[in-house]
Length: 602
Ligand SMILES: [Zn+2]
Image (cartoon, rainbow, N blue to C red):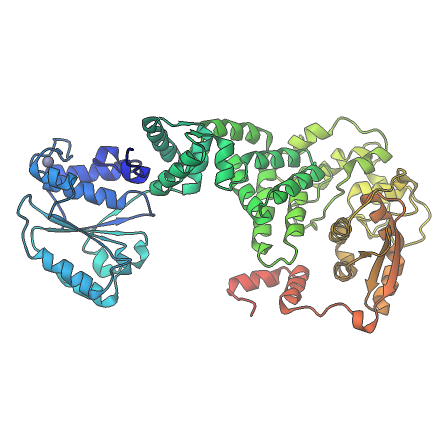
């Protein structure tokens, strides 16, 4: 049986021309070989697996070749070249400083520099990961580097250029190796696949290239793994399973759904992803990358920055044509925020859900998201509820979804007051003035559709929190629904409700976030309130809380009991981190200060 050789070794380039993705650099090296103008020391910098050692070997062979080609490549035929090919050349020494970094190792190596080569002109010393040398070893090496014999050439390689001391840098000719692009990697994998008689889907190779993150050696070893897993036919589906990669299709779907404001569908998608064993944080990171790609795909100038297969490129362009820039910016900002908070969050899933919901609401017409200093508030997940209770709506949504900015508006501000008014379908018949005549304390912060609903209720029995529903409003009359909901649904809707409450209510809203409603006997919800003052406030808004939960949880039978906590039940004492998070919520500049001073919570 034929010996199996891993692809990374089998397809290791043996000439400058076969090195992948470093053309500028190999051309310079070839010119050096051709002209015979050689430095005493070279420093090859760059990420792992991009061909530093390979290039060093090719270079060593070429400068020792007795009859190099006019192009600057080794002939491969002469005595020296054959010695190199058979790995018995005495003109090349390699030291991996990562594992042999003691002063003894270096001293033994430096002994060799004194003896001139028997065949060929130069002895080449390749020191890999040179930044790993110990101080003593380093000093021993520096002595030789300062006055090297004429027949000695050093090639130092490192993945961490910043760790190389100036004394070395100043004595070396420096070459920066580029990260392998996904495109280059795909092309190389294709040629390997062809040679090996392996069939493939280009998408699958793109996943491998992506996973290898710029390293060809990694790409080839993943390729080997995939080839054996897929038994000679590398398909996209098998590769993402094997490599535990989340299908890019998910990201395309999330963006499509977000543009249509289908938050609930995204929740279902998220649930499926999590059920498949993927982490919510991973999804968020992947989504960030995806949206960045969509952003790049919008402009022909940035299109080359997209590191994907040709097929996917088209897909990205398609999606990009549907997305407005403000949507993409805002989505990236939300994702970034989620990413920052993710590690600290005690309910990571909820954080991811909230973020995705917010993204799904960016293009929603009565949008307050991102418009200047106005508070960011979450809107109804069940859009149809508020809309079906009002007049039949116009066919606005499809257009509105793709066009977050009202056509009359030239600026990139996603939603100003004027665009909100023109876009809120329920409001089209209502003149602006009637809204202004409403409760003055509410008018600036209330999203108009809620306000509009409230206009119609004459009787004012209770305080109505903006962003919640008025129980006495006939328009909020529920369909006869009694859907079941879980504790998690309840907590999610509770949090969303708290988040919708405007600044005037921030005090009670913050308290409410700590209240943890629980289902005592379905559909009874009990809310534990920690003191008398809070109890009085809660009594006032109980009706509207009830109505809100009934509506959003689609269950008209929900009842709410407020119970003052016993002493032992008092709200759990907040940890320092939680206290900070609370403070941060009330005053965002604290977070800025923390960042500015680079503080950590002890
Ligand atoms: Zn030769």
